[in-house]
Length: 266
Ligand code: SF4
Image (cartoon, rainbow, N blue to C red; front, side):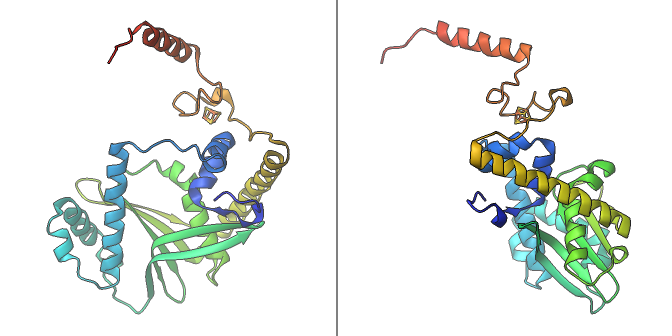
């Protein structure tokens, strides 16, 4: 994603979220490529998620998936319960346009904002964006409304189609929520659209300034306010000199203990 031409930056909702959470973290991960390794547990969750999305895409294309899920009882149960919880969505009954993994790109201030809808269903009046989530519990509704995935997905569709904001919605389906999948739907309107336009332009204007200073003078991106308590669990706390006293003590203890360990000759 790093380029000498900032105007060609491709940005996703995750990068916008990160920029708002902590610009310095954005710098560490995307400009310095200091991403932390994925744990085996995270890797397994990612693998479940991508296999589920792939099966849902194949199902939407009308390709047989039975033989693929026979050996995968968990995936099979997620798909079966989602289909029974949302039959009107997952079983085409009209001649509405439907496409899984539908991709759109919008250029704002030279940044290419890219979204990929798990499923888009659209008729002459309305367009529904659907997104599958394979983590167990629905997230807090308010935080999901503020998440850049919700805001950007709705915004990009309104900007790149003839639909008015009131004709667009976005629904998350949480497939791994017992006893059956649950959904959270977000409707849209002109007021939300205008607010997102302003917030997006503000964030991208800031990004341009930060990038320019970083590239021309090496000035680092701003750090999040310490009082917001976001640094304690951050992988970059040492690099950012944001270790709390207790954490610093623990680190000193660790260093002392390591120094105490006798060298073993081989
Ligand atoms: S330690 Fe704090 S300032 Fe540094 S990247 Fe993490 S959240 Fe941002």
